Length: 557
Image 1 (spheres, helix red, strand yellow):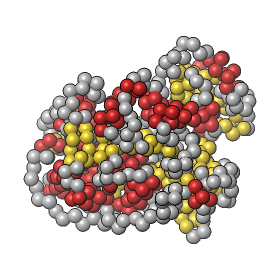
Image 2 (tube, rainbow, N blue to C red):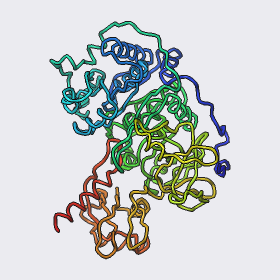
Image 3 (tube, one colour):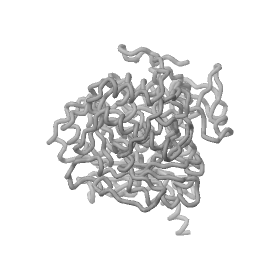
Image 4 (cartoon, rainbow, N blue to C red):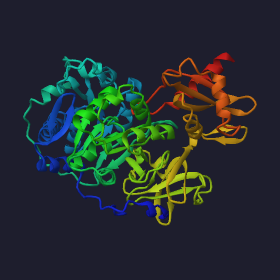
């Protein structure tokens, strides 16, 4: 195990943590007993206490057990945007000793059909605005019951800028297979004793499927709990912390850092259903938010707000995130504004969020951080499996208590995802990275995203980082496009800042890029866009942009 990062390890921190033997639901039960009247969450003008959240969890859990016949280990789909009902539903499913299957709200009916068939779910809990996508599947899949929740039942805001799905009034359905959340909360069914165990399946998040069909990652209470405790300690979460919960809860980073961790510590969540920079900054000021876990695209948009200086955001003590590297220029701007350094982390669905995190007191920009508590991380040659040393790019592999138990119903792919080294099972992340002499890890790129230009390896994230140094670049995405001479060439999609739109030409930007990077790396073509296709968690869908280019070229041929 490489321990070079111990030299930069925060002095206040132990180097290992003992993971509680209690299941996740107990976190809420204990917190509600300790702090019953404390605000668990704020939602557009409504405050809900811990005892109120637990009370509604008990109601929904009893309904799942008694009326919908949900059994232990049953997979229950959770298809919803951030809202109080998401938190309540997640813990109600756990309370019933069933398994949460969190799905991206952007999925279409056909995509949802795949997940239903894969996890064989009979029950789904969905946001009202999403029922039209999943209701048709009551006919020809295992799905038998849908619980529908209206977000408007829980907010008290008259703000006209709220997203339509937040403002929409509760709908009624004439279908015995559809059950209204509001009606369930009026029931009074018996509450059964909770007998959950740490090694019970708790949640199955699905991989994004960028390199094939999505795969369900099986996590137990124990694997999730390992990272909940890790996050709480590493990011200085206390009982009085207030988290701006802006990342989607269906995504492992938002789920772990902005929902489970505050509940474990008895902290407070300020929930955003949809990202809105005006709402975010006003909530930070109004609720004195201390923690904001995000993705780089949120930070970029947040800092581009011309009204930012009108707000007091001095309560923030921790701004961190992952998913995509924060450009150096953006990180410096954030530091000038807040005095805080962005602390980037790294992880996957298979590790229920982070395996690496930057020390809050000594972060490095565009860096994945150092291995977290009890994590053994290494870099290997992906072909020979030989372990590599400092600054040698290779595949990142990890061993730790947060690593999943395997892919759901995919024994062969589970076996292929692990290798044994020094008597330990290491998960192969598929990410190309390196670590420096101090043990900080850096992403080189995803293995499948590499561009082969005339035999030279070009890593898109490196080119993007260099493009962000241009003052006119607000966002950048680099893809590989077919080239008859070079095999592949580099193309950049760029969103210009408002001040630069109409003033910067493609040729000018390409000439500038030539001065910033090697000849084989600079973009041969640049396309300016007003927006990028994005995932619900804020990641740029680079593959969609790449496919657009390649489909256009095929049509021309």
